Structures are given as structure tokens and as C-alpha cells.
Image 1: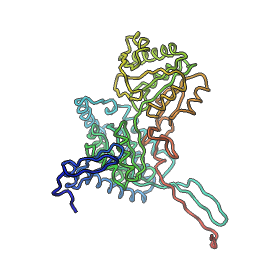
Image 2: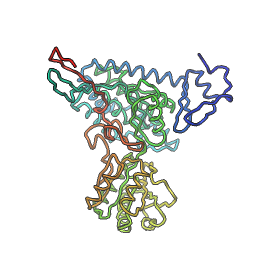
Image 3: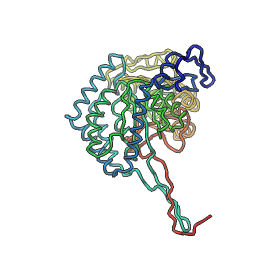
Image 4: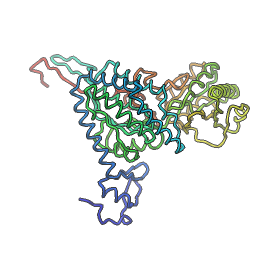
Length: 483
């Protein structure tokens, strides 16, 4: 029954959580077109999904379901061959030329809108990394089925088998190198459907048409195994995560949008992996290693990604010495990049940084956990703390609970911070090690912080071999086995 006809929107309210929301003409129109309304209890808000967007996304998920079934019947060697073929097409200049043209159009459009483009441009390095990630998938020694454990009983054996999970959905930020991540789930027998940020949509279409589809065809895999949601509308991401047929929903990016997507998926009962806000923190200990501190800061600010150094905390016991060392390191960064590094700090310590022309010092109040987004000019926050306990408490309270590095020659300080911090990624040097491919030799599908709590039974790196279910199989040798 179509309840959207002849409805006076002004006379209708809907309860979302503990908030009464007025029904708008836009909501009525969406329902009339076959769309959907999604209420978010956390904010008492309603998201509107138009009918055409809903149908388009449903078709993509249906295709992914069909692709999943087909993948269970292919030879694992075909999947490995797909990764090799995909990498070869990315490396081939003639095949990749249409992708570079599309990417140039995306970059121009993003710059015209005043958007950051550092992670949108397909540089030679990004292209090499995409190819290397795909080849790494091909070389990993696991497939969709694997015996993980067995238990012998008298007359029977129970085996635990790793098995494919189903349809994995991604919502990616607007950068083109996510194809290696998205297609990685094929290694473990899963299919994928994903939406990419609108800034990179032209590039994504070109990669799909000129590299992805040809690679699938060459390897004899179904095109339905990998599905791009071809829409620039945010509502397409909402519709995707609102589909209960998903087996896992992965949201990449940062900010409130990631939490919103996670809430949509959880309301459907779909497990989620959420990146959330990024930005690494560093605490300078009471006995900090000068040379290693300088190197850690410099190498943590080489480029802006989620694990880039964002916030530095110095302790009161050696404040002046630590601030001087931090300032010197930031000056080194400034000289290497030819820009003035932006330093957000408090008025009482600002003079230490203002003494250097290479640093652009700003003292307006800021949220200690704010993640700075930059392309060419590094931007950091520098805070003070009474002692290590207060510094760790600042991290636990204000940070996205992501990456923490503690620089100290006192091992007891580092150990105390390790035991008392809410950090899934903890180190004692540079912060940019947090990467599945770099640290674990596993191309990552996504990173997760602890912003909404610790993760059950897994680490913060989601990789292809971690996207599985577990099946139990019994082999009974005693025909009279009973209870």
C-alpha cells in the first residue's frame, strides 16, 4: 500500500529515538518514488534516500550476491591471476592512459571547489603502490577455504574451517587507490560492492572500464564479483549500508559521516569496520631521545594520511628542552618542504615557536583532537601536560584513540603509557608505520580506531584474510557415536 499519497506532511511527525521529527515534503516525495527513510537514534534525525538511488544500489548488491555464489565455484588460481592481470593493466601505459585523463579531470574539478587534492592525484608512486598491493594479494598463501584447527575425540574429529563471509560493502573517501583494497576481499572468496567519494568518481569509472573489467574477463571471473555504485550522491552510501544483505560494512574516511554510516549498518544488524577520525599523537617523555625524536617527527610529517602526526604533547618536567627539540624538528620539516609549518599551540608556549620564521604559530583555542587536513603545508597541535599520566589522559579523552607514540629513554614510561592508553596502535618512534601493507605485509582493507570502543577479537588492521566466517565440520569414524 502506498501511504505517501494524499498525506499532509505538516500534520505528521515521526519519533526517532527520543526526538519527534516533522515529516517534510521531501520525505513524502521520496516514499512516493519508492525511496526509504532512515532514522538515526543517536541524533534524532532522518536521512532521505530517493527511489532511484535505492533501486540502483539494490541492483548492485543483488549483483554482488550473484557474484559471491559464482566465486565459490572458481579455481583459486583464477583469483590470483586476476590480481596479476589487474596489476599488469595498471602498469601498462596504454591501458592506463584513459585513467590518467579521467583523474586529471577529477583533480581540476576538485581544485575548482577548493578541495584538497593530495590523495586524489594519481602520482607515479600511487600507481606503483596500487600495482604492488594487487601483486601482494596474488602472492599471499591463503584461499577461500582453509583448515584453521581440529580437535580429536574418541571416534570422531571436529575441524574448524575458514570460509567466505559473503558480500562486503565499502564506502571510501575520494581517492583512487582504493581499488586494490576493495578487490582484496576476492582472495578470501567474498564479493564486493563499494561507493567512492564523488571527487574520484570519474577516475573510478575509468579504472573499472579500462583495468578492472578486462582483468576479471581475462581471469574468467564474473564482473558481478566487483561492483561500483556509480553515484555521486551521499544517499547512495546510506542506501548501501542500509541493505541487510551485506555481510560486512567497511567505512573509510573520517569525521561524523563515518559514524553515521556505521549506525545505519548496525541498525540492520550488519557488522561494521569503521575508520573514524585519524591523526596520530606523540608524547615526549621526561628522558626523550633527542636524535630519535627529531627523526620521528620529521618522518611522521612526510605526507598527510590518517597516520600522520597530528598532536604533540610535552611534559612540564622538561618543558623548555622538549619544546626546543620539537621546534627544531618542525623547522627541519619546513626546510625540507619549502613551506611554513602551521603550529597550533597555547599562548604560554607560543614564543618558543614564534622565534622561528619557518613556523606559522596560531594560538586561537582548538579542539586537541581535531584532525588537520593538509596537502603541502604540514599542520600540528602542540600541547603541554603536567606529567605522563595527564598526557595519556589527554590522549584517552581528546584523541580519536588511534595512534600513540611515546618517545622516552625510560622504558618504564613507555610501558606505563602502553598499559594505560586507549590506543590500538602504539609505538616508540615515528607514527606512519600504521599500515597493513607496510607493517604486516598484508594489503589493508581498512584501519579502525577505538573511538567507539575496543574491537572484539581482532586488531585495528582489517585485511583480506580476516574477512571470513568459521564453519565446523565433523568426521565421524565411530558409527555408534551417540550422546
